[in-house]
Image (cartoon, rainbow, N blue to C red; front, side, top):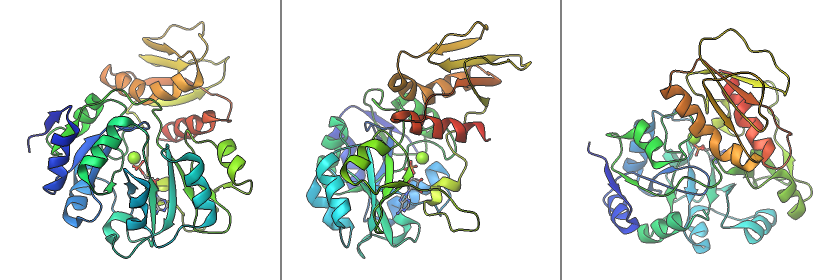
Length: 313
Ligand code: AMP
Ligand code: MG
């Protein structure tokens, strides 16, 4: 398959209308979109990404009215989040409408819904005229793509089109909040923070996987966000293991010498840069990437979540 590269949202939307799959930028990471009502197109997403078929996809809408096409109801808490934040890097898990095919939600009776804020994403969604399911546009398990060239690196020849936009502003995947029970539960942290959500619904909690319990967010149990290099989380004073080639990303410069180094000017910059840094290190054949730990508040919670997962592999 030839992957078509374009900067035109209307050109990219033609591929969706013909049952194809298209990577497009959002404010979080690049997504790989298919028409939410087209089962065959959705099958292509799972195949192209080599995504486990028990990992549900997030549906993206270009307008608030489209949410009703996807869900069978919106709880008062969910409505409060929509009013406070949408469009935003925030995904709400709601009861699914019967019209949405089960392949989109990996057989769950719920669906994650998000309205992206990125202008090009919104233009593209408007041109498509239908909600799109869109997981991150990477091969499953790899760091999420924050540039169109990272999408190209993983998926060239496997998808129909890449809508070429800028580097994503946030760089970490959306916050996922389960709104199907009394208390909203954060399944995945992101740029809409725990603190932001608690301001709207003070009962909001962070989901902790209990032993012997079915995981509420199937994606949480899969290998994620990992470069080929070994990732080591460190505090300011740390000892370097004996590895041939090493890299560092963090907020504070250390005394050690690294083959590749990125000192970020803020936590936002760190979050925005980390996945691309991982890919850069892999291309350079780095063995060990040292990542400075940050305080787990605000977007620091989401950043630490991704760093911990990457270091588990
Ligand atoms: P990705 O789009 O690749 O970043 O992954 C989507 C994430 O959202 C995964 O962690 C999924 O498990 C989670 N997710 C999507 N839909 C649902 C749902 N209906 N219920 C729970 N989690 C979901
Ligand atoms: Mg993903």
